[in-house]
Image 1 (cartoon, rainbow, N blue to C red):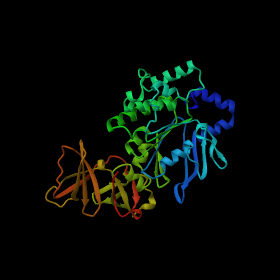
Image 2: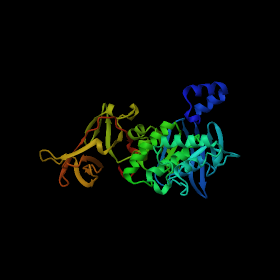
Image 3: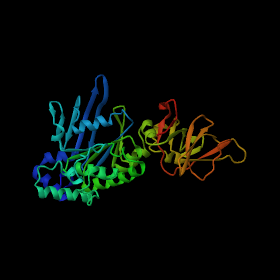
Image 4: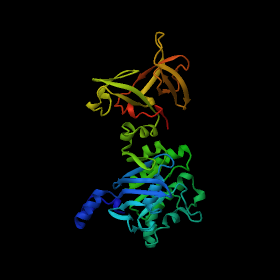
Length: 390
C-alpha cells in the first residue's frame, strides 16, 4: 500500500532511514496549504488560506455555494494554479512560486460527483484503468482486493449501466484508490444520490477510507454529511476559513455567528452576566454552563447560542402571559419545529416530538432544557437578526 497505509513499524523504520527531513514532513502533515490565494479577474475567491491535513485523516471543506471550497480542491489537485502561497504534499511544494506540478504528477486521486466511469468498460476494467505500470497478475490482484474492499466482489464484470448509483460510486472510489494516491479528493461525492442512499453511502465511504488508511479531503455544502463522514471539518465563508475542528467541537463551540448558524438551526438568547449567573428572559443560567466565559466579561451583555433541542415550549400556566407566542410551525416528520417570538422581540426555535401539542395561539412558556455547556457571543457583535437557520 501507499505511505498512508504503512504500519507503525514501517513508518518508524522509514523515519529512521531518512533522517530529520522525514520527521519534519510527518509533523507537517500529508497536505499543507500555506497562505494560498486565488482570484478570477478582479474577484478574490480565496484569500491567504492556510490549512494542514494529517495522515489518515478525513477532512471536509464545508460552506455555502461560492465560498471557495471547490476552488480550494482544484488547487490541491493541480487543476488550477494559486496566485499566491504554497501547496505542499508530503513536505514537497507542488504549487507555489515557480513550481507547479501537473495533476498526474502529484499522486492525488479525485472522485467527482458525476463518478465519470467509462461506460464501455466493466467495473474491473474501470478500476484497472490507471494501473498500467503493474504486471497483469499484480493488476488483477489489486483490482480483486479493491472490489472486495468496496463490497463489489461479484460485480467485476458488470458495466456501469448495469450498476446502481451507489455501486457506481463504489467503483469510482475504488478506481481512485487503485494507484494508491498520497491523498484522495472527493468533490460533492453524494450529491447525485437520493436521500436514503446518500446516508447509507456516507457511512460506507467512511468505512472504506478508514479501512484503506487513506488521507482524504472532501467538499460539500451539506452539514449533516460533513459531520458524519469527517474527522475534522473546515468551515469556509467568502474565501476564508471560519473555523477548523472536530465535528462535535465545531458544532457545540462555534467561534463565529456564521458557523453557529451554518451548522444548524440557531437562535440567540440575550443575557446579562451577573456574578455567578447569566440573567435571561427565560430565567437565570449558571455561569459555569456558559462555555469559556472569562472574568473580563462581568456585567456585560451577551447572546447565548440556543439550538432547537435546547429549549421547549409549553402552554402558559395559571393564566400568565408566559415568555412569548408561537409565530411559526414546521412539520419535519418525526419532529415539529416551532418558532417562538419572545416578549423581548427575539425569536427562538423549539424542537418537539410530532405527538406533542404546543398551542399556536395564545402565550407559551419556554424552558431552557440544555444539560451541556452553551456557546455565547458578545452582544455588541449581534447582526440585525438574531435567528439563523440552515
